[in-house]
Structure formats: C-alpha cells, structure tokens
Amino acid sequence: MALTDSRPVRVRFAPSPTGKLHVGGARTAIYNWAFARANHGTFILRIDDTDPTRSTEENTQVILRAMRWLGLDWDEGPDVGGSYGPYRQTDRMDIYKKVAQRLWDEGRAYPCFCTPEKLAADKKAAQERNDPFQGYQRTCRDIDPEEAKARIAAGEPYTLRIKVPLDRGDVVVHDAVHGDVTFDAKELDDFIIFRSDGTPTYNFATVVDDALMGITHVIRGDDHLSNTPRQIMVYEAMGAPVPTFAHISMILGPDGKKLSKRHGATSVEEYRDQGYLPDAFVNYLALLGWALDGDTTIIPRDVLASRFSLDHVSKNPATFDFKKLDWIQGEYVKAMTDADFSRTMLVPELVSAGLEEGPADAAYERRPQWFDLLSSILKPRVTFAREVVDKARFLYEGDSVTFDEKSVKKNLAKDYAAGALDAATDALSALGEEQWDADSINAALDPLPEGLGINKRKFYGAVRVAECGNQVSPPLGESLQLLGKQTTLARLRAAAPLAVPAEA
Ligand code: GLU
Image (cartoon, rainbow, N blue to C red):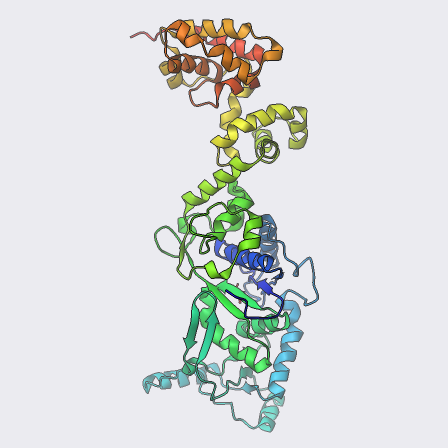
C-alpha cells in the first residue's frame, strides 16, 4: 500500500496491563514494530492503563519483559522516554482534561446530567417504539451553558459527551486491511468522553494520545474496528488528522475457535519458558496473517524489518498451527552456529541437569571444541534445548553406560555380536590418540562388517549399543570421538558379557 500520510511514520503498540502479553498482542506488536522499521519510522510503546481496577504495575513489567524477550525494541515509551511522553496513560490525566476542556469551551463537547436510570429508561423506550436509533437521545445537548454551570456548581454529577455534528453522515473507515468500512451515521451517538468520576474513556484517551503523539498508522486487533468511527469523531472534534487504520484479524485455535488456554500456551512468556527461540517465535507470529510472498516461511528478523508491508496482511482469521511453529523453531536451531548452540542451549541445559558443573560460561570454556562437536551432532536432532540432556547423557556415564534392555536384546544379545565387538576393539585400539577423531574412527570401522560377513546394520547396532546403551544415539564416529579412546575401549569390554545370544 502506498503511504497516504505524508508525515513520517509513527506507530504505537498500546497494551492494557490487565494481563500478560498474549500471542495476539505480540503479533500486533510485531506488525507495528516491523512496519516502523520497514518505513524508517518510529515505534512507540504506550501503556494503556486507564482502567485502574484491572491494570497492575506487575502486568506492565511482564509486558515490558516479554517485549524485550521478543526483541521488539521501542524508540519511545517506558524506560526509554521520548519527546511525546509521558507514555503511560495514568501519567497523562492532565492532558486528557485539557483537551476535553478545550472541546467543551469550543462547543464540541458538553456536560450530560442524565442518571444511569434515565439512560436505561430512554433506551428501553427507544426499543419499544422500534426507533432505529437506540443510542443516547442527546437529552442534555442543548442545555443552556449557564444552567449547566450552575448545576455543576451545585454538585450535580455529570459526564462529558462529544457533540457529533448532526449532519455528519456515515463514517467511512479507510482500513488498510479491510478496505473502506462504512458505519451508519445512526450509530453515532454523542458518546461519553469523560466519566462522572473524572476519568477519560478509552475512545477518548486513545485518540488524544494518538493525535498528540503524531501517530500516522494505527495497527491493532480487529476487535477495535467497531470503536473506530467514534474515534474518528474525536479526531475531527480535535481538528487532528485521522491516521490510517489497519485492523488485523483474530487468531484462532486449530478447532476454528478463538485461540485460548484450551489450545495451549497463550502468553508469550510461556513460550519462552518452553524453550522457543525469540527469533523463531517472532518469525512464526509474523506469518499469522501476513506473507512475504506465496511460500517463504523462514523470514529472519532483518528481512521482516525491511520487507513488512500492510499490503500482504490478510483480513481472514489466522489459525495458530503449533506444528508449524515447532518446525520453524527446528529450522532456527539448525541454522545456529555450533558455538551459539553450545553457549545458549547445550551447556546451560547440561549444567541445570547436573551433568556439567556451572556456571555455564565457565563450563563451556573448559572444552569448547568438545561441546561444539557435540552441538554439531545434536542440533539437527532437537527442537528444544531441553532435549539435549537425554541425548547427551551417555557421554557422562564413564566406563559403564546404562543399557536400554530392548536395544540390548535387539542388537547385542546375538551370536554375531561378540565378534563385532572384538573386531571393533582391535581396529580402534590400533588408532593413536592423535588420530582419535570421527573420520579416522569411521574409516577404521568401515571395512569390519564385510570382513565379519555380517551386514552393516548388525555390526553398527552392536557397537552402538555397547557404546551408547541404546540404538537411537547420535552418529557413532562423533560419539566415540567425544567419549575418548579409553572410555570407548572400556565400554566395548564392559559390553562383552551381554554379547551372547539370549536363551531361547
Ligand atoms: N489498550 C487497547 C488494547 O489493549 C489498545 C487498543 C488500541 O490499539 O487502540 O486493546
């Protein structure tokens, strides 16, 4: 989409700290961030905490932490400041009051003294006479300002309402995702911008902020589309330019219902705790409703930040596909360098499993090449860091590996097994310590099955179980290199008693 706004791009993510940062909010944040980056604009984080009963500082901190984990750096907002602050709505109350006062002074807003009972009765009456307009009946719109002043001075409670011009007509929201969406003028009543308790409503505070912060594009969930015509009324009353809107679709679970706890984790930090890489997670979420082209699935952060556009955002609901997320995670794991994998995934897991003595950095520095070799064989075989522990455990068992009974029965308790272990022992003993690497080990073992007259599967099955305890371990050459020559030979000896056919 061509940018219709000539102002420099400024977008905001404005979560309400009434809960944790969820998948849907995270995707909204990603789109705002990527849109700002792709257009050399500014990404603002604003905390919409005007609902004092449900907003907490703790939730705010959780949201900031989740944003940082996602790697969505904000140019203005809490902690970093900026020249359009403050960036928490509770710190902006004076600003809302000032703007409301100005609209009131200009006759674009007015006090309403209707009690909740009166409003309910009016609504009921409108329903009973089948009035197509069932909103606020504009009862107080024409109260004489002097009278209003006197009633306020006498302590009568009042709200402040926006005065929608009677000839305003239909409101068309030009939405970058949905196209033009027309809202019937009838639906626009003079809605409340300030409550009787002196707090601003969402539709007012949001617009005051978006207008004063120079927001050019409002990218948010399409649950807010129905608020937009009212918000446009506030922009118009303020005489502020109306931003471009982009309302993005809901995220559904695999059963077609709105994504919720029933489907799995919903909060960003649950995904962090499950071991997802932030890059993989951001990549996956970006694809929930946006596509770079028809089929690219791996979209690194820098590509997202340069190529994201609202053109390719779909208006259809997106379905959360846990399998695809895991596939993408696996691809990111495979693409890591061995050293990165060692430092950030492998060694910390081994330390927390008690197999290595921490701290992790120090453990890594003790034998970086050993860990990197282990990483090179584990990386393609795991999706999550936690999976390394079971796969690496056999390396930590000294001369006597734990045997998996089934594997022993299938591969070691055979009439050919003793011969296989003997041949392997002879060939490997002949290798010098300085030759103890995967290639030399593989070269030494390679001719043996043929010499023994057994197939490779049988030969390697026997040696693998003797060395690793089971038949699903990583590649043998590297595994033996990691074990070292002495341990490798000791394990062949230790397995010899098992290398006899089970009695029938
Ligand atoms: N605080 C609102 C929410 O979390 C923001 C809506 C908006 O972006 O205008 O839903």
